[in-house]
Image (cartoon, rainbow, N blue to C red):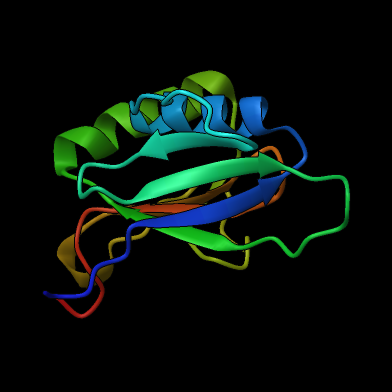
Length: 125
C-alpha cells in the first residue's frame, strides 16, 4: 500500500466560520460533523477537519493545487468578499498574484489567521 495523507486537524476559533470560509473560497462542500470536527473534503481525498479550541494555537500554512478555472473562480470569490490577498507568503505584496513556475498563485488568511495558498502549478514543476 502506498502512503497518502488522509486528513489533518485545523485548530481554529470557530470551526463553522473557518470551514464555511474555506469551503466558500475553494468551492468545496462541508461534511457532516464528526465529534468535535467539521470536515472539508478535497478532491484528492484529504480532509481538513476543523476543530474549535479556546487555547492559543500556532497559525499553519495550507496550500491547494487548483486548475486555472478553479483559480479564476476562487480569485473572484476572494475579491468579491474583500479578502486581502498577497503574491508572497510574508504579505509584502498585497493585491498581487505571483506567476511562479509558469502558473498563478496567491496567499490569504482565514478567519483564524491560517495562511491559505492557491497555486495552479506545483513548485518546481
